[in-house]
Amino acid sequence: MHADAAQQNLPPLIQALCRPEVWPHPVQGVRVIETHISWILLTGDYAYKIKRPLDLEFLDFSTLEKRRAACEAELRLNARVAPDLYQSVVAISGSESRPVVSELDGHEQPVLEYAVRMREFQQDLQLDRQLQSGDLTLSDMDELASVVAVIHEQAPRSTPDDAWGTVEAIAKPALDNFSMLEPLIDDAGDRSTLLRLAEWTTTQIALLRPRFEERRKTGFVRECHGDLHLSNLARFEGNIVAFDCIEFDPALRWRDVMSESGFLVMDLAARQRIDMAWRFLNRYLELTGDYHGVALLRFYIVYASMVRAKIAAIRAEQDIPGTPVYTEAARHYRMHLALAERATRPRTPVIIATSGLSGAGKTWLTSRLACVFPAIRMRSDIERKRLYGSGQQTDGTEIEGGLYNPDTTRATYEYLRDRARDLLAANFDVIVDATFLKCEQRKLFLDLARESAASLVILRCVADDSVLRERILQREWDGADASQATRAVLAHQQTTAEPLTDEEQAFTISVDTSQETDPLRVAGDICRKLGREISD
View 1 (spheres, rainbow, N blue to C red):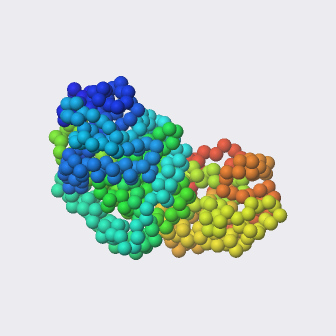
View 2: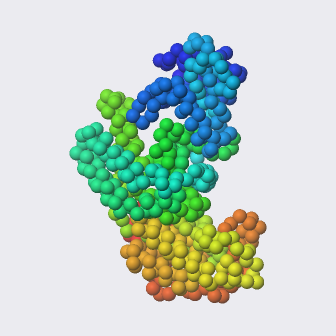
View 3: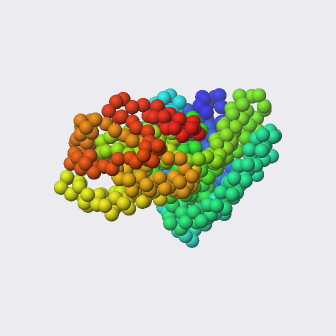
């Protein structure tokens, strides 16, 4: 909340800090943001965060030393993810009416308070505000995914002996959401939905127990950000950075990386940007290869939704029905309850397997289909390199050698099949971006569709020969694509590709990407073939 100091019921020290002359650097004016646990003073070049003297159920800032420790923890944690944003912990001494702000090192005067000093950024550069203003784009989701992937890769990992990430540590807060919500809800329909969600959550905890334990033992429980959503992300000096890691409760930080990613997916979906949620998720999975973790994603999306629903219901309970605050809190509660309910609905998942020569536009089209369908996409070029290393660049003299020899190609398709099986079991639609030029490759997924009771579509991408050659030449010049296809590879594919069988033709939709291609129209064609709606 922004306001002049005179208009706020601020403590004397905070009011005194609103005077520009008390700061050790030039200040034209001071604005104050109040949260339920802190005051943030914006001074122009720097922002200073002061902890409120509180002792709540989930944090204890009740003494000066505890607030100092919390400031130091906040600096340590956030400097990992935003070293250029977080600077130091400063001491505030003097008197409440005439405070003095100085560096902590070498400070000898009695301290009144401590603050975390940050570089200030424009508030409209927060990603939640960027989304509202229309300045956040799908391509920004690629950068965001890279930021989150780096945070998770560099985060400290728990050991099997740690208490973090146990089934009990996951189950208790998930089930507590329902016990805390139950007395706040009067509507019979909502109470019925809560009961179904609680039963679903209990069942999922039992079903996923082996996967939870496996993730904990294999290092996927890490010291994460803890509160990663658009309001805690911003553009700073041209890059997206995360800030405001949770410092007061390590149990909220030490979590499965898929839990944190799921929180961000939920946040984007709740803001009615399913396309951005899936663009972020797909790029994150491409970078990390953590397709095994997707088995837990629906559980974590429901958990995150119920956390938000609980917070909104508590806020509504604290206000008077009919007031703007109550109405907005009630809207958020119902929105998150509905989002959780949708995530648990039984459904028949879909496999979309591409087929086409190199340069036929498969990757361009599927990257967009994954956002509008939505679905989780896997690329054979990326997964082949993840399995076997970068290999040698194909130069046309060894078309089916090196990284692309028959054995590695067969193993790559089998790996894609196995990961697709996991994704289908988790109730996600799957897009497999590969050439699928051989019958045996396509048969792997025909068989998978039968055994998993999934629907299947073969998306056959075609283009004029001149277009294929031009695209491959452009990729060779750019050198940035995961595909290593050359014009010699294209020529080999054209002479060795095995045509679709009559059985396969029944599952096939053809798209000529030489022409202008509308991904939304293609998604509609797929859904009509399947007899379902987009996002069904």
